[in-house]
Length: 347
Image (cartoon, rainbow, N blue to C red; front, side):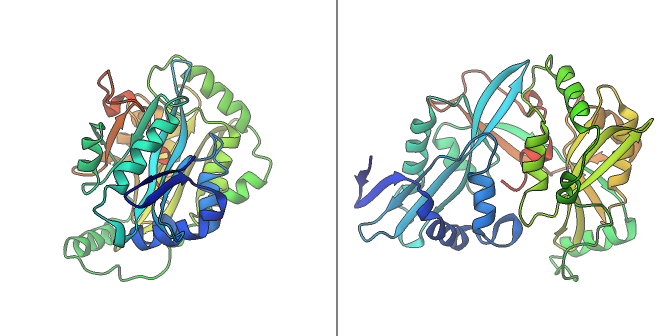
């Protein structure tokens, strides 16, 4: 069903809209995490997501040109064995000729109403420019998700940090050279021991009341093995010939610095030794530093300090949330989540 407002028609997003949506997103948000808005990345993110296809709305003028677009990425948390269906507002854009008409607000509120029947939580990490608008629409700022950093190449890191402070260019072209195997190739192989590791992890996590994503082989393959243009790599460690832990991350340019973004660390319950081995391996990924979020109470967080990781001041992402029907009835803070950085980055 379509509705008209201020000369515009609001209707559900359909597959045929993808080229126009990509053009609009590129004009508004540039190239995104891969440097370009490709149909392949859009399909991976919004159509192949194991939690379900992304609901979306567009605002269209009479001639068929898109004036705005809004999508919600479906997500699924677990908390104490209970499933918490969620969405994350992503990929919103308004054509420059239509800005200032309240299209962003209209699309967002209409889509919230559309998902209210099957969604419990709405969360995202807005930047400083978009946060005020979300707060006006009922979001609550919950705090900042901290980032832990380990310097891997001190001299290169110091030069890059000085260049960043001075706002000088990167000084290097192309992605960092990384010796780690790609996640895509790893998932194409036998992955011996992964299912057992994940089952043991899930059995231990069922008593944790914090919100976390249950890692399954299908989810990890989608998130890291199939992600187009993101070059995720895999780190593994073994004990007694069995897979004891696995981690995923990607080498990337962060201004003048080469960063290994550590997205996920999975080890057997209580195995801080394997977590430490994975964290130390990440520092050998060919980058100037490693950056990731190590949730409190996890094996990785316990191993972080002896592995050279420190929480970086004035970094991290602002977390905001609401329910589909209005502000959260109970206060939450980032500590109520057991995030991996892979839950937040690139979306």
